[in-house]
Image (cartoon, rainbow, N blue to C red):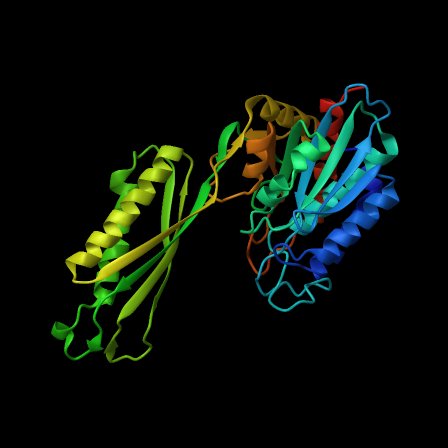
Amino acid sequence: MPIRNRFAETLPQITEWRRDFHAHPELGFDCHRTARIVAEKLREFGCDVVEEGIGVTGVVGLIHGRKTISGRVIGLRADMDALPIPEATGLPYASIHHGLMHACGHDGHTAMLLGAAQYLAETRNFDGTVAVIFQPAEEGGAGAKVMCEAGLMERFGIAEVYAMHNRPGHPLGEFNIRPGAFYAACDEFHITIEGRGGHAAKPHMTFDPVLSTSHMILALQSVASRSADPVENIVLSVCGVQSDSEAFNVIPQRVELRGTIRTHDAALRELAADRLRAIATQTAQSFGAVAEVDFMEGYPVMVNHPDQTAIARDVALEVSGQCLHAGYNMGGEDFAYMLEERPGAYIVLGAGEGPGLHHPQYDFNDEIIPYGCSWFVGIAERRLPL
């Protein structure tokens, strides 16, 4: 089952859909235009059921096979939302909304799943039902969780669920996947350091929160270097520092830190949170300040199920002949919530050279559309054989 010839024929059409989505990016759950177009196209394709408004703006289409004796339902998921990044591509189909762009390729994921849905609705070479799932708010909004809480899996009887993401910087058409933990748990922290401000010329009369914060940032690096087993995967990044004063001659009263912790292990995730709190509070105390730590759990570890991973790899090999064992990824992915609900797998597809994800000059490579569509179709037909 190499790339389906049909997708060479429909590539210009699918590309046109993709570029329209690219020009009209929408954030979070505010994917109303995208969801409306998706639902309209699914109805045009002849999907047997199309339901909107699942998880705010999520859309699900059901396509019944030539036979439905098996009674099985396989879910295929694509994300629809964009990012709050000003686009710098200069493309003719660049974002018309200043400050918003499809910088992660969700426009391409949506278009590829639409292409696969069109093909499956035409051919129906399977026994059972395919549920095509179009999800909002992957970028930090936990749209997958909201759709699951809305009864996605139970409502449509989904037995397994699969998803894909493009990956710039890897050879075009090369798939990568791994069983077990794949993408990291993605947590955030916010620390407020309260000292005693004063005149910069009289630091001895203050409890300087800037000095305390400086030591704290360095000490927090010991969580990865000294608290965690060196063979474990952990990233702790302080990503922002802000005080309540902009004057050059004032020691501020308050400084705030924000950052993220990424892990692949539940015990290490808990350890990192505990060490973060201890280091922050005790470092601040040693300088006469007080630290308040707010630790916010984000997406859980995304865990691929072994049997479904093997199936996803086999289909990828049939499509392109290239599927490598992936390394761990420290990024977060809310498909984790769907994989907690049902067995399934998540695969990445090489998009060739170009700016990376979340870059203002990134653009989805339309050349990979036939690979992605073929993989989605291959999963459906492999898991629902006639």
